[in-house]
Length: 212
Image (cartoon, rainbow, N blue to C red):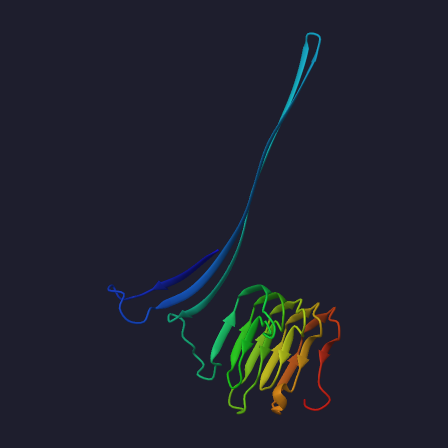
């Protein structure tokens, strides 16, 4: 496993804030198997020989990066605070009483969470807490989330938020669960549309008795 900081700058002296800065964790799993087998047989004047060689060299690599790229500019000033996209997250462990989220957007923060693959988390694969003000909204879209061991694949603790075009499967509670987290009364401004949910233990999409 390698943990590296990758930076690039337009300044020849590398001064000031980098143009790009990403922290990357890379894990390699390499399997090498070599084998040589020979068999010989003699029958009088006749000799038979058979030889076979087997070589397998397999490298599986997983990489997770986070950071910023100042070459990318947001044309829309109303975009959320954070963009979290195209990450692969697998096997989140956390000691009790920690929850063990895949991706978590805290209270009064907004973000676009899209095109991520999140597998086998202890808690929710994705959770957003919403905001007390209605000025901005989070967007959760085009994610594949599977196998939350104790919770729903995607949990919405408050809005405004749009949850669309996700696949949420095989989790301990729901595919998508709405929860009035902390009894804050923030379950408003929530749209859940065009998602695929399957094989979750308590249901596909769960909405509490009060709140919408």
